[in-house]
Amino acid sequence: MQWHLIFNISKTLLLARLRQSVIAAVGVTFGITMFITLVSFMTGLNKLLDGLILNRTPHIRLYNEIKPSENQPVNLSLDYADHINMIRSVKPKERPLEIYNSQAIMRSLKEDDRVLGVAPKITAQVFFNVGAIDLNGIINGIDVLVEDQLFYFGDYVTKGNLRDLQTVNNSIILGKGAAEKMLVDIGDVIQVTTARGERLSLKVVGIFQLGIADVDNVQSYASIQTTQKLLGESNNYITDIHIKLKNLDLAPAMAPEYKKLYGTDAIDLQTFNAQFETGTSIRNIITYAVSITLLIVAGFGIYNILNMMIYEKMDSIAILKATGFSGKDVKWIFISISLIIGISGGTFGLIFGYIFSSIINQIPFETAALPTVKTFPINFNVFYYLIGIVFALITTYVAGFFPAKKASQVDPVEIIRGK
Image 1 (cartoon, rainbow, N blue to C red):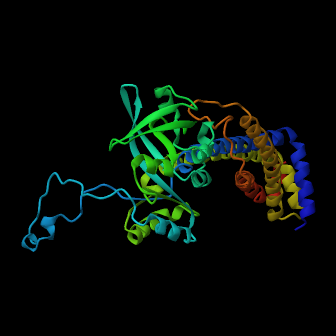
Image 2: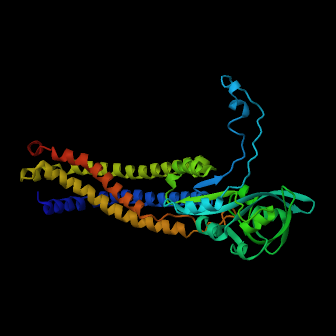
Image 3: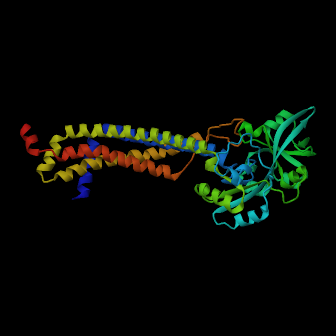
């Protein structure tokens, strides 16, 4: 098979119907352009929304849950071993929120090769005293440097400096909603009272905004030392250990392992936020379905154009066969035409897709709910460009295969006799 000759014949036939060929290539270009633009924008948006959850949520959380004892006294009694015991109004057992031997647990976790980092945390229920009104709130005691490194907390601090929590004694960073309710700003001092009645004055050194109202209205952050002081606890008092893994997919299997090993309750991100992964999957399915549909529609355009070309070029096909070209040669001539259209249209589609994505990425997108976002999110992932060009080639090959097969089966004798 003389590929150079086949390519020259394909080019001649392609130029003979240049207008129709350009229209087919434009169809592919449009399909690839919209595929790249839509996928880049939708995955960028998904990445933004996922980041709001993943950036601030541990992959595994170790804590002590307040719950009733699993083994009630009546169930442990041999006298009632063969009975069905119906127990109502079971009260939670007395269990400290503090994680016992937390320092040793964190040292052990840091030695685990699967663990990226470990962040201690203290959760304290408090009341913010605003005149004669007490507002419910939660103060999260954090290791400032570790929290910023693993969970990017500094990105959500819209006013002030996160590091001031570490350097300024008795300081706090308030959620934007809580700060607005109390009418406070950087440098103001607020009164905080714990559930046990301890009261402490805290200086506001920052305001954060996650973009989730339920969090911004209630949550606030202080250093671990300040929170321990507020609760009147020792330096070893820790209520939560947040774990970030190198591979998020390992979390469901590792949570039960840690629960058994360290004797604490453990919950993984997938269990805690099951609806989050479902929403992400559905958005991705819709994105790819719409994008691939555009490419398939472009493929039908190529199919119709090649069919018309074969019908009009019956004489040329008959002459090619009469001069010694086999059916296989004729088939590859028309498949080559289809692939040339796919390659040229796909290449321009990638270029225009990148241009349109870059333009969208420069459009201002400012909203009070997402203070860290300044422009529309775009995901410039090379993988999507690879998918685009590969699918363009597959679509155009399939679109050209059937007309090419039809051309290869043309009987030159019948065509010439008909003339």
